[in-house]
Amino acid sequence: MSRRLPVYLLIDSSGSMAGEPIHAVNVGLSSLIAGLRQDPYALESVALSIITFSNTIQELFPLTPLEDVQVPEIVLPRSGATHLGEALEILCKKVEEDVKKSTSASKGDFRPMLFVLTDGKPSDLQLFEQMSNKVKQANFATIVGCAAGPKAKSEFLQKLTSTVVTLDTMDSSAFSVFFKWVSDSIAAGSQSAGVSMNTSNGTLPPPPEEIQLVL
Image (cartoon, rainbow, N blue to C red; front, side):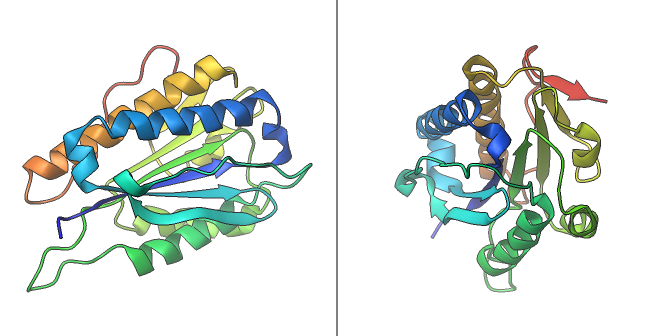
């Protein structure tokens, strides 16, 4: 079996994402999958998992080979908190269980990539602080945070990663551009993993002008 590039997407599914935002996310995820399937490196190596977070955490599907991924439509609660800390806690458990480690006899998976999208701030701040430190110490090649819309608090995502981007709006065009960039970033990761016997190095393509990089 070829070495996998595990990719985890954490998507905010709290009530504030209702309407056009979550519809645009669903469309964007479908486009992301379709785009990656056009890339031979990604098709050979990428395994994807999506976890949504509101007042409950849902693993839409576990790490699944790209060719087998079928993304269910994300349905929101009528309201709800944003339990990002709990989502990160579950993420760490999944990574520990699912990502194959290298041994003296065989190569394990490539270092995973993580993308976190939220339009607000964590409701479970104490747990978020604990888990953001744990995630930073985990063996991720790339962690990207996206603060979407005017109410998103990028400073919390900056506690998780130095690579934080913002979207001014939460309409379909903004999310389309974002998920296209995520797709390009995953494809770049799969190519660097494919040409290197070491690991993917976490190098991302520059974001388009619609996506602001927080410095």
